[in-house]
Length: 285
Image (cartoon, rainbow, N blue to C red):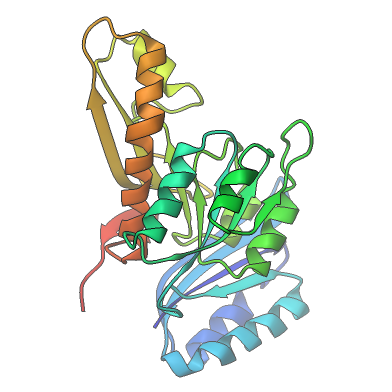
C-alpha cells in the first residue's frame, strides 16, 4: 500500500526524526523523501512516501497524530489506495465550463470518482453545485480574497483525496501545497506550458501571432515552477485573422474542459503518478 505523509510546522531541531524512525521501525519501505527548511519563514516542511502493508494504515495514522501533537506539526497521512472511489474537491471561481466538465464526467462514469465538495472564492457558481447536488462553500470575501485556512479545514472535513483547481483563479500558498503534496493537487492552466505561463496566456499567445492555442493539466507542487509536472495537454488551431475573443471562447468552452477532464481521469485511474516532482507512468501490477 502506498502512503504519503506530509508534515508542516514551525521550524525546530529533529522534527523529521520521530516520523522516519517510526515508519522504518514498522518495516515500511521509504520510496521518496523531501525536506525543506524555510529559514526566512521559520517553517519546516516534509514529504515522505512509503510502502506498507494495508493493515498497518490506521495504526500509522494514530501514531502520526501523536507525533504531530508532540512536535506541533500538522501531519497528514494519505493513501491513493485507501478507497476504490476517490473523493474530489472541485475549486472554481467564475468560469463554469471546466468544473462542469468534471461533474458531468463523474455523472456519466468517465471519471471514477465522487465530487465531495465544491469550493469557490466567489458566489457565481453556487447554482452549478446545486444542479449536481454537491455541497458548496464560498471561501472568499467580497473582493474574492480566499481564506486559505478555511479551505484546508473544509478539505479535511470532507476527507478529500484530490483537489481539482478548475480555473480557480487564486494562487495557493506554499503551506497549502505542502499539506496536500505528493500528487494530490491538480490544476488547469489555460495555456500551453512552459511556453505561456502567467495569468493571460491567450493574450500572450495572440500577441506572439500563434495559430495554435492550448491548455495544460498539471500537478501543483510547492517548490518548483509549473511545467515539469504535466499530466495532459490539449491544443486547437485557428485560421489566420481569428480574433482574440473567438479564440478565448473556444478555449474556455471546448479545449480547457476536455483537457482537465482527461487529466483528472488519468490520475484517478492511476495511469500516472508524481515522483520526485516528475510525472511518470505508473507500473501496472
